[in-house]
Amino acid sequence: MQKQIPDPSGHPQFADLNRRSFLKTGLGGAVFLGTVSVTAGLSGCATQPAGRLSAVGTRMDASYQFRFLNEDDIALFEALLPAMIGPGLPEQPQARNLAIAGTIERIDAGIHKFGPANQKELRQLFDLLNFGLTRVTVARVWSSWPNVTTAEADAFLERWRTSRIGLFNNGYIALTKISNVAFYGYRDFWHLSGYPGPPQYAVDALPQFQNA
Image 1 (spheres, one colour):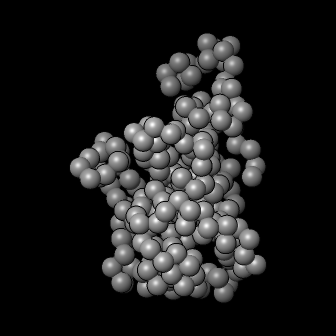
Image 2: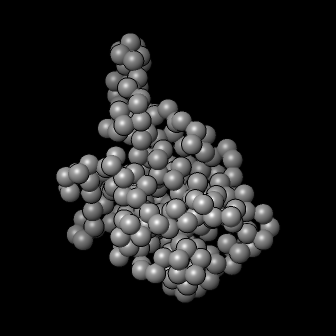
């Protein structure tokens, strides 16, 4: 994966990801994803951004307003992040939950800044994974995402990583890239990627660093 330099404000830099297509599906893949996305919407899958989630029954910060991810997407990333980030996540349960929640919020904030083309691709990818029929037949994940274990999520990611089908390979790359940028691009986790943070002279000289 291309190394990303974290943004000193504490938010990941998604700008480089926004310049190119994530999935490169070709015509057949695009038609397939589009059909799945429409079918998922008609079947009752969540279609609207989650907005502000109640603090009751969720680990999300009730003050944050989701502008792209819906509740199904949030459950998807809650299942996948422990497999993708692995030992980078804190071991203490509360700190671990907060790290996952914060990463999902940064994923949402980053995708919200993407152009319409990449947003459309990601929406179709998420719908593919959230729609029960394609989750089982295409992703081969039998349980709904809130019930998926880390081992099952890891097995799914490995299947897509090693698949001979380009759509699955590119779906794997999209999921892991936006997740890794959102996690390792956050100041609390810079040290895990080997990035020591901005030099002190830059912090002292630039007001935006002091206000971050």
